[in-house]
Every structure is written in structure tokens, then in C-alpha cells.
Length: 116
Image (cartoon, rainbow, N blue to C red; front, side, top):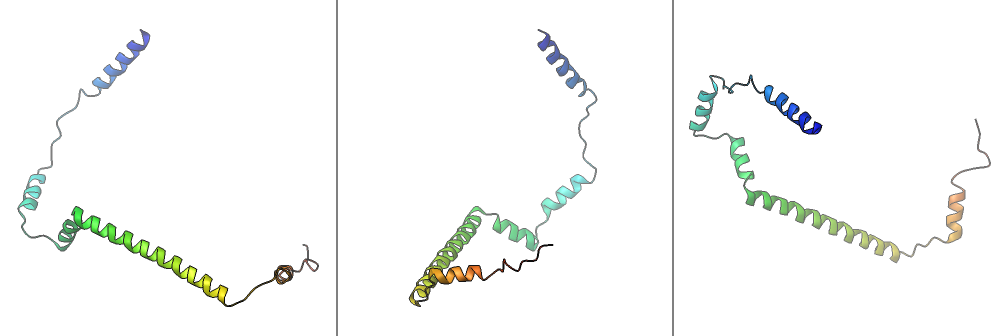
């Protein structure tokens, strides 16, 4: 029962905040600006471009084109990597295990390392 009283008190407090409310009034110049804009016949270049691009058919065609181009680039890149791998394998260059160990050991001289 105490919970219901606190809820009722909060509702009353919220409704008391609405006592001084008045109807919103527009600025005197707003009506003339809206009417002038509605009666204007020519469109600017940006309005024409915006209205054309906002059509659903144009937007979907553009998104589809971008998607197709992305897929084309992705698959082209994969085929180039595959072709490079095949060309590298055909050259006959092979690194043996001993060569890779020598390369990794000689890249840093641990014996002559100067400690601060």
C-alpha cells in the first residue's frame, strides 16, 4: 500500500509540472518562409541530385554495383596470389632447413651484445 502512495505522489508531482504549459507559438516569419519554399518552382542542382539518388531503385543499383566490384576485386586478388604461388613453385627455389637455421642465427649477434 505504501508503494502505491509513492507512485501516486510521483504522478501528482509530474502533473503539477505541466500546470504552466502553454501552446507553442511559431515565429511570425515562419509561415512566409514555408509558403515561399512551397511555391518555388526551380530546384537547385543539389536538390535535383539528392532527389535522384534518394530513389530506392537508384540506391539499390548503386549498392549492388559496389558489392559486385568488391567481389570482383576480392576474387581477382585471390587468383593473382594463386598465380604468384604457382610461379614461385615453378622456379625451383628451395630453402633447406640448414639454410634457414643459418639465416636466423646470423641475423643477431648474441655474443657481442652490450648490456647497459
